Structures are given as structure tokens and as C-alpha cells.
Image (cartoon, rainbow, N blue to C red; front, side):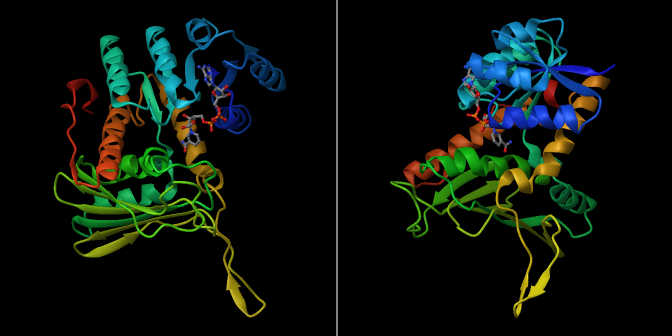
Length: 334
Ligand code: NAI
């Protein structure tokens, strides 16, 4: 039967997930919601004809809910993910799992104590058709081993961004998806500052380049340029021993007009990764109904946060930082 979902955090992305699940996807419905802003939560519940709860914890514990989605602000992810684990329910948590690595580790411990994998983290790039093509080509081994990755993450603008946010909010996506592409953990992180654009607000250093090395010695550079002022642009080139693989972009008609050729690109992430979000949630729903978790795990959430913190430290100290993870528990080995 249909999976009955309760969603806590009826903000921008929370509402877009309700919309996608209740109008486009199959096998599930969001039937309940909760938010600290009760009035707004009630208006959302009314709009979608679903039930508003006084608290996310109460909603998680309810028999009317089979699975939980957490889309609150980052510092509150832990409390709701933990409540869902206590209720023995599958829980999808938007990225990051929690802002601090210690909090991610506590979620990992809570999940292991319950003896059942329940948590999935919203690293949706793993579901983007382009990254999936890249992964299949790398895994085929046809082009030899990956040696270097050149990546860019450019936003049109980013009001309110501070110097710490490109690593913690944007490049966290590269941190997860590149580790997944390569199938290995990172060893070192470094962040350098090129010349700052005059479009950066206040103290923001923009662009920034993050360098990562992996355990086997692959070298990665990721440029973050959050005020690039031309559109939203995600690039990833994987240079292998005998070939170079480039991340494809969503297709758009090229128009010849006025003595020029123009191919539109996306304006922001919600447009660029719309397929990724749809596929991510459809696969999560299917997995929940079949009784398993097969997407990014709580462990992946922990590793992502440890890496981001190391990169932040590297940025703040302008040094190369060694990255140390706890050993992966048997529980998470597939
Ligand atoms: P938002 O500010 O629009 O919504 C956050 C909601 O959480 C608000 O409705 C707020 O009232 C609620 N909230 C705050 N504290 C709460 C608490 N203690 N208990 C219950 N509800 C509480 O933010 P947005 O953009 O929707 O982001 C939400 C989450 O989604 C963030 O963790 C963000 O990192 C993540 N996100 C992930 C993206 C991705 O690329 N996968 C893209 C955008 C957001």
C-alpha cells in the first residue's frame, strides 16, 4: 500500500518535496506536516489537504505516519532524525545530516543502536542522470584509472553568503558526489582564495578553490564562484589514464539568431537538479516500501561533514589539513 509520509520543516524545499511527492511521484503521499512556525504549517496543511501536527516528534511517533522527511533548518535535523529512529521509521534528511560532525556521529550511533538502517541523506547529485553516466563510465574501467578531477560550482548570485558558506553549503555537494564517483575517502583538504570579485558582499571571499586528495592520490580541484553573474553552472571533468569524461548538462535547443548562436543554461539549482530530486525521492519511496535504504547513508552524512570541517579549517588557517575519519562500522558496509 501507499507509503504515508510526515514532513517536518514546511519551508521552501519542504514544500517543493510535498508538491513533487503528492503530484508527480508514485507509491507515496505526504499526509502530515509539522513546523515550529505553527500558523504557516497549518496554512500548508490546508493547501495540500494534509494533517498539521503540533510537533515533529509527535508526528514521527504517530501510527498515521510510516516514514519521515526532515527539511528544517540544519541545526534541528538531529532532533527530528533521532525521533524518527526512536519510532523505528525510515527518515529522509535534507543535507547536511547535521552542521557538526559530532552530531552526525550521534545519529550514526542512534541508528546502530536500533539495529536497522533507516536514515537517508539528501545528497541528490548521486541521482542526477549526468553524474550517473560519469560513474558508469568510470566503473567500466574502459578509460583506466581516474587521476585528476577539475570541477566548478557557480551560482548566479548568493545574497547573504559569508566566506564559510561556499565549503559548508555549496561544495558539500561535490564532497559527497565525488567521493561516491571515485569510491574512496579523502586524505587532505586545502582552500585558496583567487582575486575576489567586486560583486562579493561584505567580507565574502569569492571565488574560492578547494583542493582535495583521495586515499589513492587522485587530485581534485573544485572552484566555487557564488557571484558568477551569468547563470548556474556545474562542471566536472574526470581525467583518466586513457580518456577524459565530462559531466553532461541538461539539453537545451541551440538557437541561431541575430548573428549569434545561443544555448540557454539554468539559472539556479532547483532548475538544474529537478530530475535528480524527482529520481531521488522516487527511489527513496520504492526502497522504503521494499524495506531497505539504498541511498546516501548516515555514515555518508558523517563523512561529508568531517570533510567539510577539515576544508573549513584549511580555509581559515590557510594550510593543508589532513582528514581523519573514524573507521567505518560493519553496519554500513554493503
Ligand atoms: P527554509 O528557511 O525555507 O525552511 C526551513 C523551515 O524549517 C522553516 O519553515 C522553519 O520554520 C522550519 N524550522 C526552523 N526551525 C525549526 C524547528 N526547530 N522545528 C521545526 N521546524 C523548524 O529553508 P530551506 O531552503 O527550505 O532549507 C531547509 C533544509 O533543506 C536545509 O537543511 C537546507 O540545507 C536543505 N536544502 C537542501 C538543498 C539541496 O540541494 N539538497 C537545497 C536547499 C535546501
